[in-house]
Length: 131
Image (cartoon, rainbow, N blue to C red):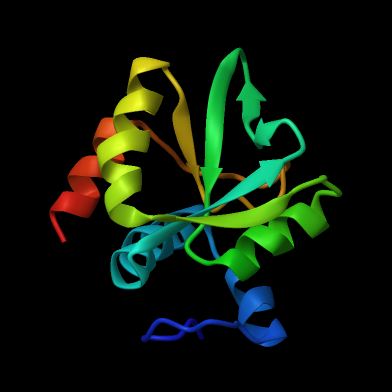
C-alpha cells in the first residue's frame, strides 16, 4: 500500500489504492505522511489555490503527496497543478491565516460526491503538533 518512507513518485497502483480509501483512512494518511514528508500538497489554479465550497463554507483541499493532488485534478476535470508547501510554513503561516478567514480543510478529497473529512485549522495544527 502507501510507502512507509517518503517517496518522490507513487506508482499508479498505489495512487489507485489511495483514492479508494475511506474518508477516515485518507485523513490519517494526510496527518501521518505530511509529518514524514515535511510538506503539504495543494492544488493551484490559474487564479490562486483551488478551494471547494459547501453550504457557503470555503474549504482548502490538502493532500499528503503531489501525485494524489494531481490525481484529484485529473479525476475531477479541474484546471490546476500540484504545489508543495513546507510543513513548517504551512503550520506557522497558512493555518493561522485559514483560521482567521474561516477556511476549513478538506483532508485528501477524491471526488466531490465521495464523503470527505473536514478539519479546522486549529484541529489540524493540534494533530500535527502531537506527532
